[in-house]
Amino acid sequence: QRLNCKNTPPLNSYICVHLDSASCSVALATAEKKFPQGEIPHSWTTYCDHITLVHSSRYYSSVQGEKDWETVESALGQLVSFKLSNLLINTRIAAYRVTFETSGLKEVVNIPHITVACAPGIRPMQSNQELRASRIDSDVMDITLSGRITLREHII
Image (cartoon, helix red, strand yellow):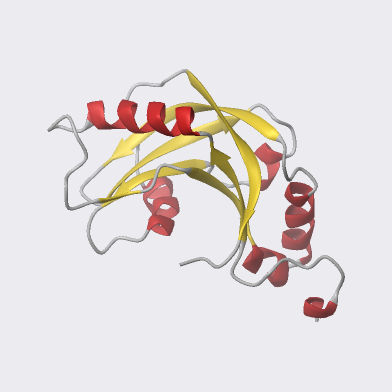
């Protein structure tokens, strides 16, 4: 079992790009303008603060997952830039696809994204499925933002 290995990730943790406050504000304001009402519905929960790179569950599930975790873990603390590329808004979620210019991150994350907000009863992790299944009709954006690679523990 990998649980007894050196430098194993805490259970229920993940490594993400935590957006700086200016980037959070730009991403949120840009998304709100795209909602039909000009704002995120009041009943929705707003997130818009990180890009998940890898969950600890991937580390424990496969050798490739372990390699991916270690690749991203080696970049902890680094400041990275990314671009908002498209925005999906439907009745369940609002989420941006993002693109990284940093080598290594592109290869690890299947669908790099920021969950902006979710309708009641929808969990942020559902953004992956929504983005995978949906055709995004919004304009391609070219907004560059930044954040720091961070370890977060205890997924809620």
